[in-house]
Length: 315
Image (cartoon, rainbow, N blue to C red; front, top):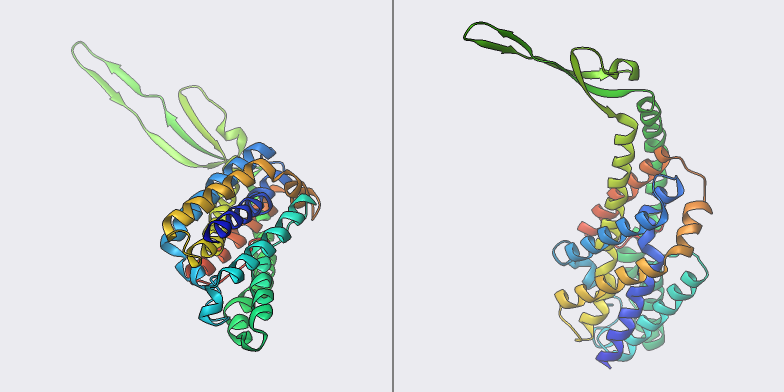
């Protein structure tokens, strides 16, 4: 039975990757900053990094999704219970992924835990514990994200619009050299400042190093996409690894490594349908809106992971 749970957990990790890996980079793809293949590669690598970091930063989620505290200890560690949770969650996420529907693996696992718990010991499921430690963060996080995004996205869009009309440039004067009979004197000066594009044009006697501020903001968008993907790996990996660890199939580190590998493979090979839905089927966005959305999502998920609170990157 531990082997069966190990296999089911790997399937769950793969379909999780297929459904979730692109979510951090969906704003990049949807706003046209990069193409699909670059977006999914960036998201997969950052998700894997977050998964590895979860060993050190998100142990609370490993405990929460083992079922302990929600159902009695003997039920939480029973193989039929864990197998039921794994199969139910994997089927739910797998069917949604095949249909191109972005859903939350966190919610699928929570529903599977509740369903398996009520099926095993209906009178002894600790609903209050489940609500406080798992359901409440899931309910509040989308509302918090909405409020923050309403404030952040217009600000980022305004800054990006201004940056699109300007360049930051460093103007370096060409050294002036005075040559005497036995002495060469060299004098140079450097001025660094913000200027409009015409002022950044090369001029006689000067070397110009120009940095396009709009391009810089697009690169910041890439970084925030990586941050969201890192946060997702940090928050989701221990939830799936918990099945392997609770079943006694593997320790924390090897279970995490296998989950990370399966998530990466599933995401890289099978995320296109969900990517199209998220990038083009939800709302139109420009790069500034995508950057603002990523800033909010990455902040919330990383903070929640650090405190062992389950949240959904999807939501």
